[in-house]
Length: 71
Image 1: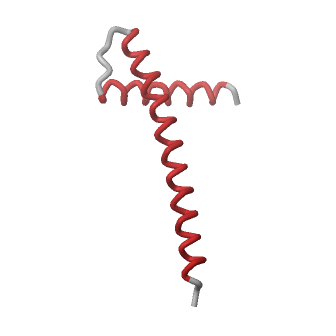
Image 2: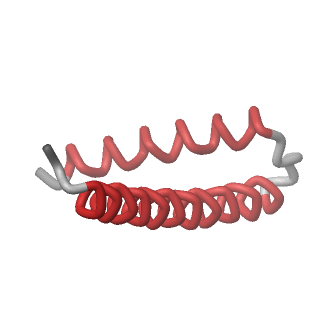
């Protein structure tokens, strides 16, 4: 039978790791959204969720094309 204290320690450790990971994902998402909003605004577009999604798709397409040409 597992020790309850050890189990609790594992759960707390896993929870802390998950919270750290989620915080990092939120930070990176905020950076991307900020870039999208600035770029769309420079183009004279309203940075709606749809426009940001299109911007993100276009950027991914450009990065994929760039990666193919550098191989």
